[in-house]
Length: 117
Ligand code: SF4
Image (cartoon, rainbow, N blue to C red; front, side):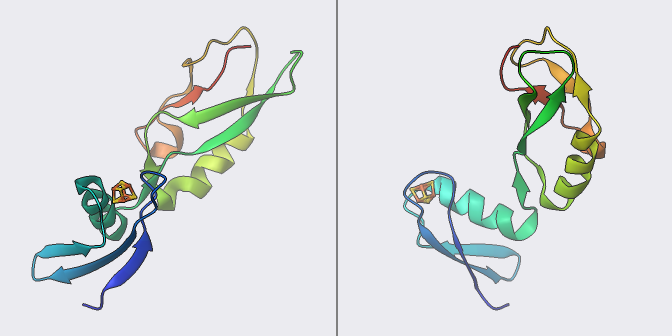
């Protein structure tokens, strides 16, 4: 397999990673720490992201509430997650960390409030 080059986004160092599959193993070069190797292999095998966005607030002083997925979700589920988020309207009071949607878009990850209103 040809090697793949990506930037590690785990910390601000932004190491330039080169990942190559050799047999059943992945070889990662350019990482300054072990987290870069984990990130590089995951990016090739099952890339995930924490989704951060906003939802509408009904009858509140603020119009929008910042929200995020509690854990990273597969990248190929982000569009489905955003379509589900578009339909949500929440009503205060809401506390930071409250679960707004369980198992959003079938990801087994909850959508939670990022602030209290
Ligand atoms: S490899 Fe380690 S040091 Fe480099 S960006 Fe990733 S987490 Fe940061």
